[in-house]
Image (cartoon, rainbow, N blue to C red; front, top):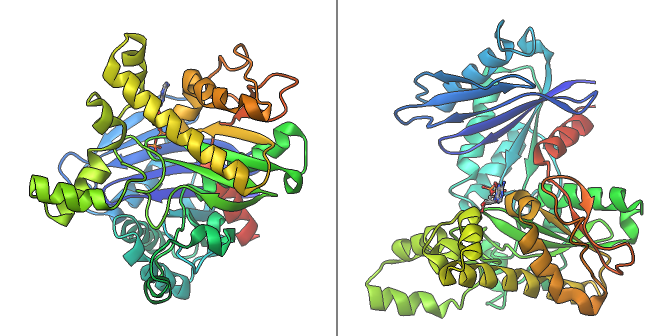
Length: 398
Ligand code: ADP
């Protein structure tokens, strides 16, 4: 069994984990920040040891990957003796369009297909590709695997992925719902089945991935049948700074009133809306949580609107699946905020869901948070996208 390097590359950042797949344990993880910007640095954390911060100029991603490899093989804070110990690299790729319904070995043809998807995710895919090329350059003989955020949702039926707009926009431009966070939804739904001790084929699960970006996914028999994010990650729930669902006519109205162009309007919807926009406090839910505790009406308003939107999606997905066995909560907010979990679940008493306050008083631990006799189960499942990427990588390189 091999060691797998998992890479998640953004336009100015690169996150990594080196995972020993024999034990599925993380040997080291870290983050390169401000690549191509002043003040770039690498934060490297070997398992069980202190984080090392290396401040060095990183003009591009090649230098960042080189620094990661140097850190991993360093005599002091490294965790392997040489690069050859890395059996394969798994890359997170945001958009796989309709070309990828699963993870793949990266070849020249795959890179070409990824480039074609870049138009659909201009902020993310080009950065993912830069990371892949940088790794290929420094590790030319190591197999690389691409794992797509959209792939899990390719099982959605047509009625779920089509928008109510002229069909030719789909046939000509591939405008449809793709969905994101697929690796997380897949991992969490598999863990739900394992924790409940039932085959996933027999379960109807709704996964609530509630982080800065947030999405809900209906998983029927292990397959995604609907999800709240769409062509882009802007659709669906109210998020940290993203609006989620709105009436598209709002854009025209506000653009006239505030004299904005479309880029400025998109900027408002992506960066100034959501929890931040409604509360005026912060995009970080921790601050909204303490605001709620202090009785701040702006915080309470944002909290309640967020919860209500999650509830609406859960209700509609229970209908879409014609039933529901379990709701799972994951990501920063889902794993840490018991109050929000309880508030969301409180709407589903009519389905026979009851939360056990004692069981729900946990953070970041796999737990069934519903009562023993609850008909629909509620669970907290910490997500692990890196492990899922590493498992796919091993599977494909076997
Ligand atoms: P992303 O990966 O999408 O950037 P995360 O999954 O890290 O986001 O989730 C970020 C959200 O989770 C923030 O709103 C933050 O307030 C909340 N969160 C993260 N950690 C905690 C914590 N320890 N307690 C409460 N909320 C937390």
